[in-house]
Amino acid sequence: MSETRIRMAIQKSGRLNQRSVSLLEKCGIDFPWRQNMLLNRCRDFPLDLMLVRDDDIPEYVRTGVCDIGIVGQNVLEEKLSGHGHGEAPAEVAVLRELGFGHCRLSIAVPKDRDYGGLETLNGTRIATSYPVILGRFLRASDVSVDIVELSGSVEIAPALKVADAICDLVSSGSTLQSNGLEEVETILTSQAVLIRARNGAPSATEEIIDRLSRRIDGVLRAGKSKYIMMNAPASRVDDICEILPGMESPSVVPLVGQRDRVAIHAVAPEDVFWDTMDRLKAAGAASILVVPIEKIIA
Ligand code: ATP
Ligand code: ZN
Image 1 (cartoon, rainbow, N blue to C red):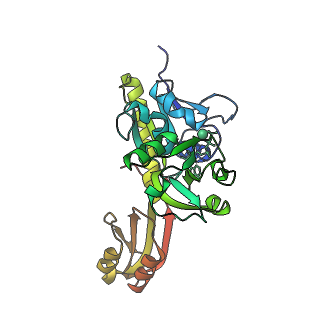
Image 2 (cartoon, rainbow, N blue to C red; image 1 turned 120 degrees about the vertical axis):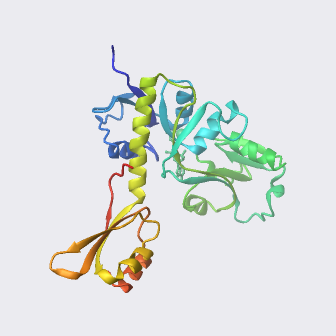
Image 3 (cartoon, rainbow, N blue to C red; image 1 turned 90 degrees about the vertical axis):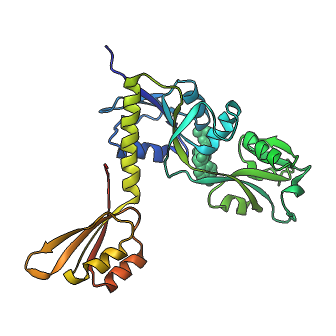
């Protein structure tokens, strides 16, 4: 019998590609990286990677061409909203939010335009690559505009007099800034997500999807966590543990030759900020080390 393998779609090149590949690498999934090959067979894990345009990923997953995929929530909603009856597409499930590819879909108007709220957009032309999401938002707000669909360089539409305003992805806002535009409404916030078709798959496939999801959880949890170590007077252990918020019970280890001092080790579920370090020091901690964690398996 042939070995069961799953097929995963990720962006071939662009903003999500590197982070998707690096997530898989951190999961211990190694593949011969050939960008111009459609399918890359991974070693050591029953996964074949399909490298495609991000716009096609929701449809590949919906139709079962791929079992899972990594795509921005913005693209997922734009491409599949029509298949469901609410905000989330009906046939594709989001398995995990992946914590990268953060952006927002926003309406922006020329800086010199007096913006007095959504209703002042009535009767204007808005250029966007997201006509589905924008249309739904405006209908819900009872605003009627002429949506001009463009596939790229949306930000230059007002200067070209193709539209009065735009609706586009923003992360830092510098593109809007340099085109003389001002962000006035955010209609969606987005990040990269791991998706799969809702239909159950054969149990061997389900088992591989579960195994991969667990590895991804381990990487995501580790990505946010830090391991913190310090030496401190034994008498201050309680004070120090109080400063370490939300951590599992720290380990307190004796120090050779120092009866009144101990080492304290703990896993912090989030980054340890300078402010916490200062408070630890004030409580008597010394030689404080904060190190990244590679994997956590609960
Ligand atoms: P493709 O060739 O695969 O169609 P693309 O040009 O449509 O690529 P990219 O610009 O690479 O797409 O963006 C991919 C995704 O990255 C977006 O759909 C979005 O989810 C995310 N993203 C994060 N920040 C931004 C940003 N500032 N602008 C655009 N997309 C962003
Ligand atoms: Zn695209």
